[in-house]
Length: 181
Image 1: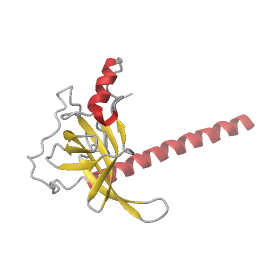
Image 2: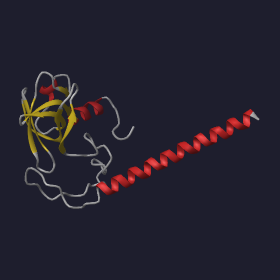
Image 3: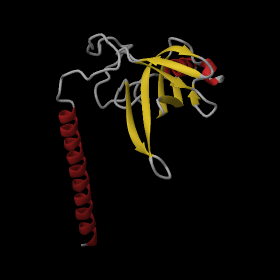
Image 4: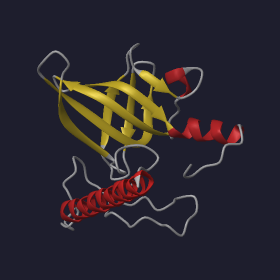
């Protein structure tokens, strides 16, 4: 009798887990559909070319639809700012951007996103640079990077710079495959 009760309990736990996963997936799909229902383009800080659909036929550029992580960023976002609570109280503005490096030095980096938006970031000794052995000196003009920064008094100070070009070259050098794990 106890064995039969354990099997029944296990079936209910499995059924409950499946129901929870289905409910969460459905809610996520509805949320995604409602937030992406407006086909009008969002304004950008600088003029840009009309957006084009991703080319999933090109194997070098896999389909990166909404909700999927592209090389970097949140769901394939090119750039944006948001406000978060600071530890210890107060608020701070965080900026993120993914794009091509148009200028770089030991003290700053300029990034231009695919839609034409360009921003300068201050690089400090506290900026975490994920590139290669030489840090910010490894980042070159033309590389694809993702930057996170704290914005205060109109100045964006990079907290992290992730160089996808250098990372991908190292991955290929050591024989690691690209794509989902």
